[in-house]
Image 1: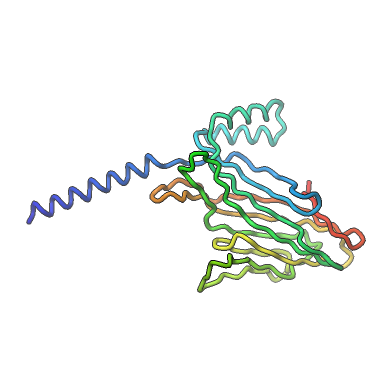
Image 2 (image 1 turned 90 degrees about the vertical axis):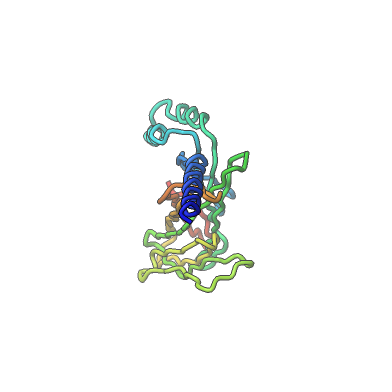
Length: 238
């Protein structure tokens, strides 16, 4: 009996060690390599995205990003050369669109996409615990906000977005639903307002037993909405 127990324990220990080695060998920690903005349709549709690479040194990438932001001469060329040494693996993209407007109000729609960039498709990443925070500059107020569930998904417990008491900020949990829509009103006498859209998430690997990932990632965009004689248009701020 003791021999059987010992054999079982040995098998379990061996399996545990094998599982640990597998998890370590398949771990591919992505490195954040910056964000970018894109005008999809001038005046109404925009996207902001983040890039993640494998095979790069985080400290080297961080330094290169700071040099680019500070306008150091030759920094962009050096940054591109660093990225060329790695492999793009993940490119989460967040879309914002002006969907409607009328007298004194406008509506916004948006969605998030997990876009893999690994040509081998061996490692897939996604945004876990996705949350959207929205802030106004005080020239508009949030009338409504909802997260849009996919038609094929049914949840028993729905976490509704929260519009805070001042109606100048709101939060939506997008763990299940990546889409949202909202309506806002210009405050009296205001014809322009800037909204900050801030997505927070954790990068996780979709491959079972692969613990690759990054915590507390943030992508944001400031978009200004302007009412010109009843016609509302939008543009990246700054």
